[in-house]
Image 1 (cartoon, each protein chain N blue to C red):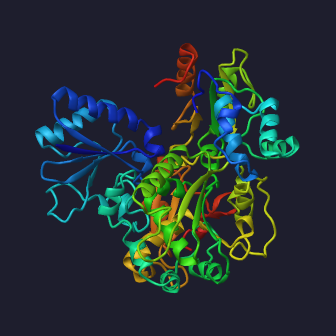
Image 2: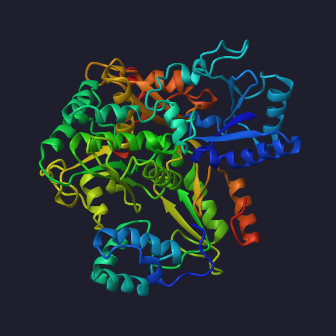
Length: 161
Length: 411
């Protein structure tokens, strides 16, 4: 999920997929992992490629939680709000995170470093409360650990061990 | 050469298994000894992660819990150099057919494992899920080989006799579903593995996909042969990156071994597998919504009939089976219907995997025979409520399930 430094042109990203609607979701996923989100421009280019109206593509992109229509931060923090995490205090964790980052869910910090999301369930309920950051899992979290991690990443400008 | 196993499923990795592995590598480098590290899936005792097993000079596999990078080297020194096995965090030794090490408990007699029956989870946390050789050494693909030596009807009959019912929640008899799909005449049919496990609190399928990847794919191949399908699709949620990576690798290995995309022996059976990533819509776990999503559309459920076995993906006959169901099929085909039907109750045969989460002492994944009481699961296996607090209720079956209070724990 770590974004590449130099993004390829969109045609190079999607060329390997046959021009059929069946591959729309895979194409959207690949484009998002390349650019971090789906821009209007990207959606129009995919529309040309598949011969499918942009409105249909927009409809699919907004149906699925995974797709983002605006640029996320370089560090994407996703706090799990599943049942097990909720019981283990994930709502407090989410509040802590909002305060630490100074943003609401769905927003990106001004410097473009962090964005904050909420996910339904990450499936690592046994180590609740959990979060996923740029595809990596962190579990058994508490306020202190969260603070330390965020501080560390803020200082480094990236996610590190 | 010394051997070490580290549980590196998502729960293991999130609690530091990666750093434990690095510590073991450093230990080996500092002493200039060879240590073979095998990354396994999750053994289900997530509370005890990271878990590391060390194979002693005598060939016994001894398991330790809550291993930090700091103590990993100490454990290796004690076990391999000083031959001292009774250390903090000791879970026990694996049964291996030899006489057990004296004074070290057996891991299957550990309170967390004692009441469990590992049928579908048998390989999780034990084998290297990325090694087809290891899977084969544990009986892998024998079920499939047996299946293609039988007629399609015989395979379905075996699954029916086992009493296996859909593990995704519907409880629909698996054999019946296959029979309907076999009866639908069409050149093109599909097998879909529903790996869109979205219920909050549930991670049974993730653990099987991560810990015993090939068992799921083998189950799909058996299903494909049985209903006369030549293509299988694994629909896996995007929140499971490790599972997706392992499935991708496993499909490549199966292709290279000629088990996919080439005719198998004289059976004339040829099967293709591919993976489709979900995009974070809870409703796509419902089979008609799932199929809409595979077709690249919004995942909107549609009314049934027509049922997928008659008109499914791209209007072709399709069976949609859950991960756990398909993994069970591999073992049922290898060991026969009775190996499964001898467990459980009259109407619900076999075992079921449950995820224990929330305010419970032993959070993790358990496999128990059908018919066990909730009390046994919560207290005997789960260790009850932390801090000796009173039990109030257990929520079962995800968001659409109910809450069961203390009075009804013995149902």
